[in-house]
Length: 177
Image 1 (spheres, rainbow, N blue to C red):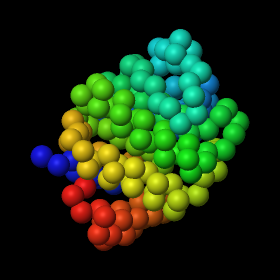
Image 2: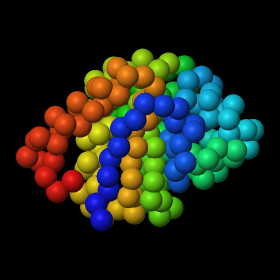
Image 3: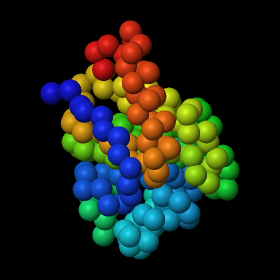
């Protein structure tokens, strides 16, 4: 069964999925934005595990338990350095590596935020294009993933992601994804 991609507005920390993805810095310090919400709701165990694992290379992804979250795991996508900016390359690499970490664990469901669009200042349109393209490319090969969610903070971001998905699916190279 090919994976289904869903877009919704909400709080990613409330998602009942195998893993949620954290828009992380490569030091794996859970500071503001999505990471801060994960730290607050997930409890200290997540940061403790991040401290044990980190730092990781820019563009990589690391997995920790979900702590008190509904998700079993948190996949930390390192798209920026602490206090730095997300780049197109680091966003693409960290999205791809998050999907690979999910495959390594045999996960069926995963939820992504709009990585890098908060404190890292990455443009929403470009983020949607890169992340959705990376997911579509990943799904061209066999995958354990059955449901992939993009959980967006507001209506404007949701609209950007939905329109970007329609645009990408209209391209001939999207066939088979």
